[in-house]
Length: 358
Image (cartoon, rainbow, N blue to C red):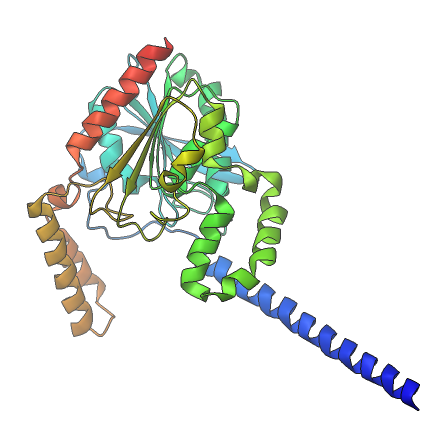
């Protein structure tokens, strides 16, 4: 009788363990699916913007092209096609965004003598893709963009510089793990490691539960990207010893954490002697590259307050005609004003790197 009871007890314990494991696995898969849908959803082009767009600039021509990245077709834009004496800047945008949101930087580089190639990543803007896939996708898309550049006679002989923000900040450094001839990189608010960034953001959404999901997060990344998801920014920078790299980070950044997964926080892992680190005080993640004059900051705060009042008035459902009128009245020259001192330093950094490699 005792033996039968023991066997029954063991079966019961085993059954309970199996049920708990099944609940954990099913629950984890559901959580990961929700997280990925929320974080990597497709980024559509916005109908309205509080910033200048390409069509707002006079006599600013561009050529639209397409190229492949895996099974997707990406849309790219060539600006400043007559600028053939200095170099090419390839622009890699952030997650949930698309290339035209960086039109202010694009215009600045063209005005300073560079040709620019900007493109929309997988699942972003005018490019195909049901989603943005994951954090390593920006590196993969940039690798394919650079392959397109290298094979296109329009860009023949031009030294290549990279400019990226956030998702693009990672891409412009991690892509140095590939075999491309890059003169210089300016990386804003990039993360060093894909999985570390996912855990960092996941913690803000799921809390401590994210650590229980770590095996599933790792497995999802590995099944999606293979060993490429392990490519880090630091490894790329260290590998490309002939490339000059500028790492720019804001101390108020809580998205690509200033105290966690950002490249700047991992600077002790970087041995490339041609790397510069810039920490910008009182700068957050998305406004990092913009003018921080009192005039602009006060204006940005004012229009945010105005829009919040509009939203409250219409209970979150502001009519299109009201939104259109509100956007039309904005001073977009002011909202779109870059930190010109910083960008003058970036242009000089590019020029010195190009001269050093010639």
